[in-house]
Length: 343
Image (cartoon, rainbow, N blue to C red; front, side, top):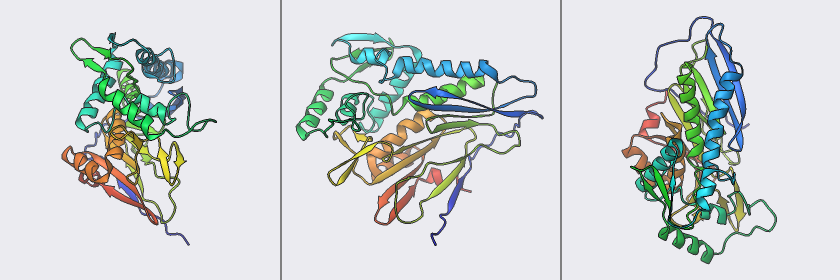
């Protein structure tokens, strides 16, 4: 008989006691964007019509982000930047500027563990929009090809003019905002709902979530945190969190990968070395108030590895959980801020 793993329960330290109006009901909206599914669970007061207006407002928010930041859409602003000539400056709309500004700050703060300009490296390893690892004819890159991409990236860094809100294309710089844009999209959905007077909700884009308030019955938005589906051995650590004024994102090595010799070549690449991470980290989950931060930091912590990542997270008070692959199963490592949420 297989043992049942212990399930951790995490509850935010600050709870807003305001409950939904009596008679409020739960409504669900959903759609597709950014190559994945999105959903919103809303608590609306009696007589409110959830209909197409709310759905349309949320879909419009996501479509705007795709038009700016998608590396899959050749007509997006990001794709046009990637193909622009050297020395050209590109005015950034407010959303693109906010994401790029934050992504570059994470790049600087983590010593390059999360790089918004690592698109050429992503493409080289087959995780971009073309020449993918799961298509016929793909071969893992040779060391000299990796070294060449790293050298070009070091000498051709995008330059953000924060005062002018514009971005310089130095020539050949390839942006890939996939480690931050989806989390930003979740935040945009949340803020749009709040602007429309909806204060009790749970929004999700491709597994990344942000919640506020409670359900009509007063229960919080309980969310089971993502585990590692392909880990063998002992029962895996499980956790549920009350997403009350919080967001969550998980970065894992099991989502997109291929076998490269005796190693797993994960889509989580270390921009500093040019290779997929090989530090034993199966997943990192980050809980924080903004999903953009949870998205970017879960990726950065995974690249940094347990020792450096824990030190980084602890000095910043981040609630983070590592699941590390070891012989016989997974080892769970958490930060003090994560443990402070345990009930």
